[in-house]
Image 1 (cartoon, rainbow, N blue to C red):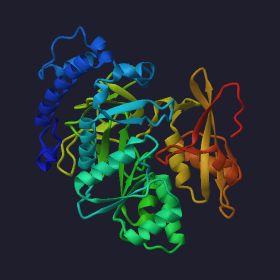
Image 2 (tube, rainbow, N blue to C red):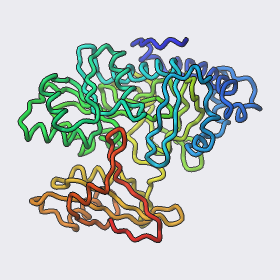
Image 3 (cartoon, rainbow, N blue to C red):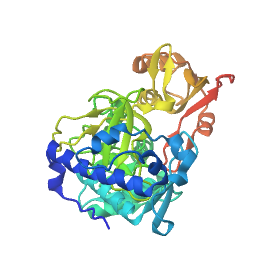
Image 4 (cartoon, rainbow, N blue to C red):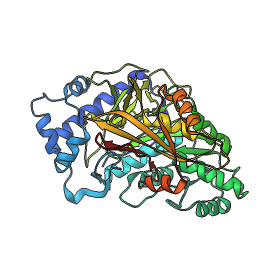
Length: 437
C-alpha cells in the first residue's frame, strides 16, 4: 500500500530534485500502465523497459489520450481487479456523456493527500472550519475530495452541500466557518443574500473557488474575482481539477497560479499540433497523473486551455504553476477572425451591475463556432440596454456579439446546473437552426 504523507520540506524541493523524483515515479507509472491497463498494454507494447533516465523521453513519444478514447473504450482503461475498486464516480459530462471513473483504496488516499497539499498551500490549518457548498452525492468526486482533504489537514468540515441560500445562511450564522468552498457565481449570490438579510460573515477569511475562473491571464484577480473578494471581505483562491486525473492545481497564499503537485502529476501544455508550449503561452492542458491504480492515464488531454509559469513562486515552491483556465477547446468561438471563449464573456457579465442571469448560444457550422448571441436578464432599475451590454462585451472580448434582454424566468429556465452547482450557460445549436437566444 502506497503511503501519502504530507511533508512541508518536500514542498520546497529544488527544480533538480523535483525532476529526479518525477522521473522515477513516471517510469514506475508507465510500466504499471503497460502491465495492468489493457488499453495502454497495446500502446506501450513496443517501447523498451522504462527507467528514470529515459522516462520523460518515452512519455513524449507516446500518443495523447483523449476523452473520446475514454468514451469508446472505458473498460479497457480499468487497471485494477473489480475486488479492489472502492469508489465509482462520473466525470462531469459538461461537453459529453458522463463517464464512470473508478478508484481503488490507494486512489482515495491519493485523493485526500492531493487536496491536503492544495489546502495547506492556500493557508488552511487545523483551526479552520470549512463550509462545503458542493455536493458529495450524485456520483460527483469533487465534494468527496474536498471533504477528505479537509480531514487530512485536520480541520472541521461542514457538509451542507447543494442547499438553499437560506440554509447556508443559517449554517454560516450558527457555525461561523472561516473558509467556504464553492462555485464563484453561487458565492456571489450567497454573499449578497447575507448582506441583504444583515447576517454577519466577517469571520469568513477565505473563499476557495471551484469550477469558474476568478483570475485573468496574468493571474491577478479578474473584476468578478475582485468583486467577490470585496463582497465577502475575504481572500479569494482558485483551484482547478478534473475527475479523470484526480489531480488539482490550487493557489498558494501568494495567489499567483495553481501549483503542480510534482509527486502526483506531470503537466504539459500543447498547441494545436501537439507540440509543447513554452511558459506563458496558452495551449491545451495535458496531465499524466502519477501513482494511480484504478484508471491510470498517460498524456490525458483535458480539453481545457491555459498556460503555465515556471519561475520560483514567492511562497518558496519551485513547481510549475497553472494559470487560469481560459476556456474549453470545444467551446472556442472564432468570430470575425477573433478567438473568444465563453468565460471571457461570462466574466464581463458577472462584473456588470444590473445583470441578473445570462447565457450564450453559439451556432456550429461544420464544427466551427462562428456566430453567437448573448441573452441576459436585467434588474428593472439597471438602465442597461442591448447596446450598452454589447459595448461592454466588445471592450472585454475584442469582438461585438449581438445581445438580447429577456425576462428572468425565461433566462433561468434555459440554464441548468450540474452536480457541482456550476451553471451551464453555453449552448451550441446546429448551423441550420436560428439563434433564438
